Length: 151
Image (cartoon, rainbow, N blue to C red; front, side, top):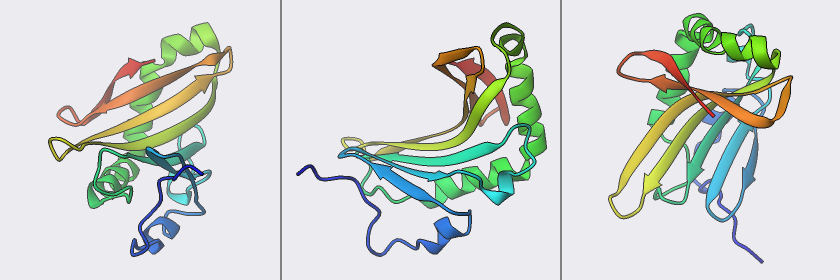
């Protein structure tokens, strides 16, 4: 039987509960915590789901303070950030239809050798006219803006 990533026994799950109803999906190297409808993201441009992602390069799969800080930052600027994402996808919208579903992703990737972490904040979305591709708008911390599209 394969070992799956997991939250540590002493992790304060109340921090996750405070964001809404959540679930965990894991394999040996990755842990995703998903909220299908976090109340703090209600009223955004499209219904946003939320995901915290951690990987095996970190010392723990538990979300850390920096991940919660990125989420709180997005919530505080939700209207501005959603407008930036809307502007970025305006051309796709004309070509590929409307956003079918969207998710705010707070991502931590660890580097076991260096002991460093890479954090990112993105909005992932699927367009109604393109079921095959996942698009993403990436947050640029220096610019304090969602400033580019990835795919």
